[in-house]
Image (tube, rainbow, N blue to C red; front, side, top):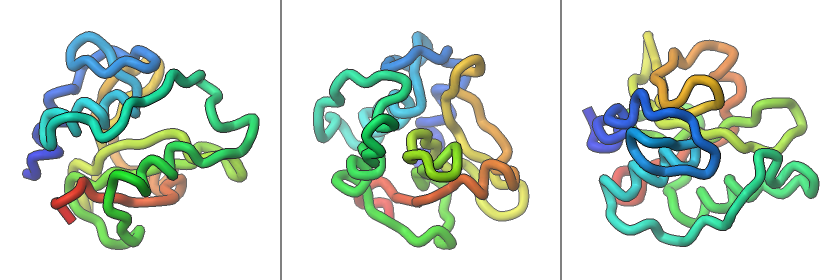
Length: 143
């Protein structure tokens, strides 16, 4: 198991709290990624500005994708590996604004993520989730 997956699994059960990034106390999907980054790599590479639940949508800006391009290593969608950061577009034509971390690949694939009403969970990477993936990244140095 990768260090990224081990760290992310340590967040399971953390309640969903918008903009939070504190293991056991609260996290959203970006907060989970930020917390795992701190545990595996150290200090976060930039300060995350405050954001609303509909951030990026009014202007159609791909802010989450742009941030991923600045700090993560882009991969092809078919180059699956444990610990990959998965970027999701939740609706056709909408901006990508959900992310998760691949926990298992291949048959029985799963990913870790945080979302409203569920907190941090490990979910099957089922066909409905898989078809929403628009980008795949690796943590720096873990390509």
